[in-house]
Length: 233
Image (tube, rainbow, N blue to C red; front, side, top):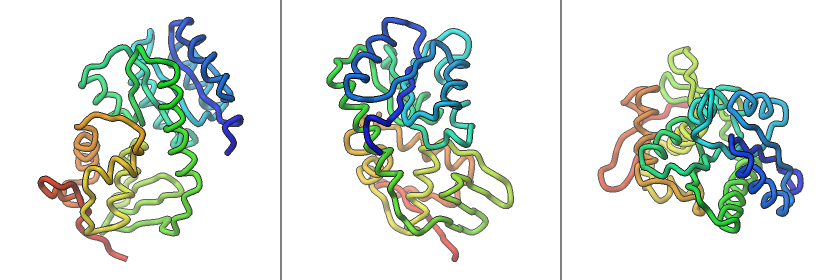
């Protein structure tokens, strides 16, 4: 996909922030849309199908966290990248963002060149994922069925809803059952080498996965990383 065709949706209730982002992103050749609140953002995203959504955390009505969660529950938007852009830099705010399915969390203020660099890194991950030619489209683990094409997980006949990053992490671990994935490899393959995320990000996602699919599938290798326990073909 050429960069000129890549679409970015900016969601912020401050017009000055929207204009600042629009100016810098349009200079880079991106097609840019904007919304001033969460409801409007969901409507525009559903129609325009952007590759990336830049989302403010604090907004009137439904906040950024709820907006992110709602977007992640819309099937046709399952692959969209979401990054928060917020003045709130506390660890708990970032963790909350990742728990709702965000791909990145950028703290304001940020210089234009650094912002564009972070966005390019995110979209590079999107492009690499779109061209992934892995032949393992469906993975079966005991009573768990993971369908990579449909972005769905079924456990014991029941559909399990997973945010994008939790799904990708599950696919990574399950695709090589028994292999120990260290933290650096997980960060690289799920978030990308150029994306900066908090130290607890992986732990939060693993905890959420265990809550949804059960504790028995993912094993912690102390001081190293994680591995998937069983796979049946």
